[in-house]
Length: 329
Ligand SMILES: [Zn+2]
Ligand SMILES: [Zn+2]
Image (tube, rainbow, N blue to C red; front, side, top):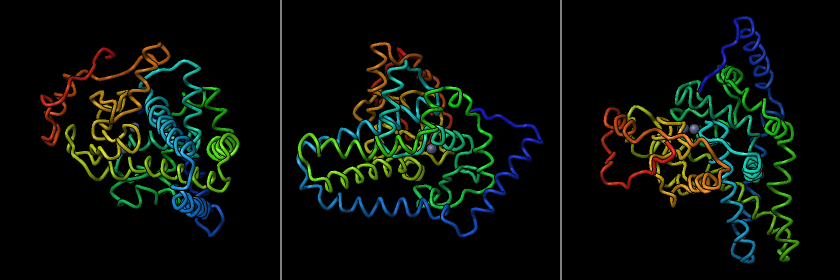
């Protein structure tokens, strides 16, 4: 992705600002403990949700599965493919639907999600990557969120071009009110629905929702960890990003990660339209059929085969897989 390069004076000011912030935060204070307290508390509550999961009413379990699915779609089809990579366009109703889906996960604002992801792609698996997988599994999975980022990474996060998100009034609104939206749509409403409509016990309803949020959180983190450490590299053997089908199953089709880092503008984030492994692709294609999703980007199959032949690790067997639907090229 492109990044704006500020003028030298802007640049110096930015770096100094970042350094000052980080020097302050490196002292022992509540700020540096916040993510540790946040994740520890939610994990402890999620354990109660796990213990009581088999005593939940069937409707509550179906409700959890529904929220898990739409939450993953909000991340994959929304924050990732739509807002980070602009791999397709949506009309207003679909944008609002996807934003609501994203908001059931208690993840950060779309703005922060996107800028971290754009920096990840630009400096993948280097010291400037916020979740550099060369620093080990724990760091790239969750550790990077539990400690202060390096000043040079913070500088890149400030530099990356986010104009498209900031100039969109809906995304700017979400950025301003992300905390309130997350609390209401991730915890309060999902907990109240089973209590009000089918008399689920309030404690089980709440802790099962926390469990669901933690499962989606780890599924999304697994893209940065599992899919950057384990799997084949049929499209570019020099990348750490790998094809990991387990990750695809966990989070609606984001495990084709070697492909994705080679062709990040592909709206399916995969060469093939295997909907069973890639519910996000199915979701986008369904809305494309009724004209709500448009301008779907996809590289030609010839280009993909050429790149795989030149750079892949030899694990790609294109004659053994079904042809991709290329009508959206
Ligand atoms: Zn990646
Ligand atoms: Zn990406």
